[in-house]
Each structure stands twice: as C-alpha cells, then as structure tokens.
Amino acid sequence: MPDTTPDPSREPWENGWAPDTSRAPGTRRLWLAGGLAIATVITCVMAVAVMDTGADRDAKASQEPSSAETVPGLISFASPSVKKAAPPGGKSGMSSTRPSTSAEPQENGSPSAARSANPSKSPGSHPGSTGKPKPSATWRSVESVNYPDRYWHVSGGYVKLDPLGGSESRQDSTFKLVKGLADSSCYSFATQDGGYLRHRSFLLRDERDDGSALFRQDATFCPRASAYSGAVMLESVNYPGRFLRHQNFQLKLDPFQNSSLYLADSAFRLVGPVA
Image: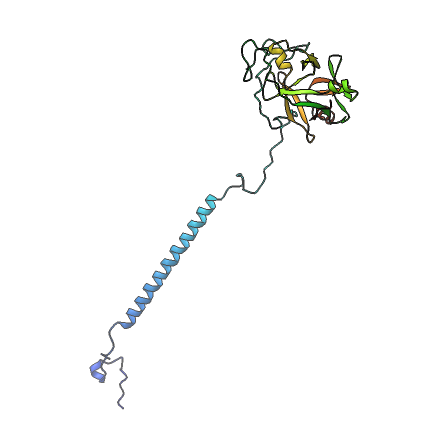
C-alpha cells in the first residue's frame, strides 16, 4: 500500500498526497466558535442570575425593620408614669351624664353658685313641678359589705348603719328606689314618710324635697362598679369623686381613697326590703 502520509516539507503535488475533500473546510474552527458562544451564553445567564439574587437580597434587607423599630412579637416597656389612683368609673349596667362642674365644695357642704345651676330636668318634668320622677314600686334595703348584719337605717333624721330591730326599725331601713331627681340614669332613695335621702354638710340625712335644684342634686347618687361581687359604690352627682361610705356607723360623703378599708366601707348591696 503506497504511503499517503504527507511530507510537510514538500508541496502536495510533489509527494503525491492530495487533501481530503470529503471533509468540510474549517470544521474545527466552527466547533470551537460554537463552544465559545455556548460558554459565553452560560456565563451571561449566570451573571444575570447572580445580579438578580443580589438585588432581591438588598430589597428584602431594605424592608426589614431596623433595630430602632418595633419588631412584632416583642414587648416594649416604657418608663411608668406616676399616677394617682382614679375613682371607679362606669355604672352597674347604667350610663349617665355627669354635670360639668369645677367649683370646690364649700366648708358647710353646700355647692357654690356655679354648682347650684339648674340641671337638665329628667323626662316627664314640667315647669312648676318639684322635679320628682314618677315613683316606682321598687323597694330596697341597703346592706353593708363588711358588716352584712347592718343596714342603712334612718335614726334621728340621719342615716346610720344599724342592725335590724323591730318592725318600726325595719320600715326605717327600707327605701323606695327611684330614678335620680337630678339625673334619671342614677338613683334617689325615697323614705317611708315621703322624704328623700340627701347629703348636707356631707352627712346623709332624711329630708323633705324643697323643690330646689340643690336638693335634687344632693339626693342623687350614681352607682359605680365595686371591688365586691354584687355590690355598688354610690357617687354623688354634684360632688364627683365623693362616695357614700360608713364611718363609725354614720353614712357620709367622703372623697375616694384607694385603700382596702375605704373600698369595703363604701361597698353596699341593694337587697330586698327587710320591712
């Protein structure tokens, strides 16, 4: 078999060798160019993916709260402010509008002229009337929380906390619970002799209605929530912040105090009539 290996030092026609015409010229270069193009495309795709990942990471970081912001789920504590204990608010299933008064009580317990202004009359009142609401048939006795064997009792014109006695004592310990004379969403206590319980000189008394605005305010008390189950605290309508309490078994109007003794002395249960 003749040797067809070309001699690089001689021309093809001199050594009898002819190029292979069955192979397309430049095939290797085409393969190299194609591989280079594919590598370039892959590199670009990877670069774009890396750039997108970095952009997403930066956007997510910009949306995350800084250390100075409040992170949900964490509790931040502020420095507590020193506040005085506030008297109980709200009522036992009742709502009322309290007259806006700012004058301080006088020494004898009578409100100032600013407080003595005629309040809004309750529905059903008319000029010339005494302001009394239409009486209802709700009779109640008022029981002390920390002295459950003692009840409000009219004695000598004053209201005291006494144990039950005979029939006459029981009648004087039973009151007709009516709508407040100065505020229909509050309470007034009518007595057996046709009078009302009102505060004067901050002591609770049994007196006749004189038809004045001052009397209606002094005889109106609004029920507030108590610390004891089934009991209420009774706040004066014209002296907000003062509640009825017993002290030495005398019923009086006293400013609110955040003490266990005051909360017990000012808690009362409106029970069925004992007469």
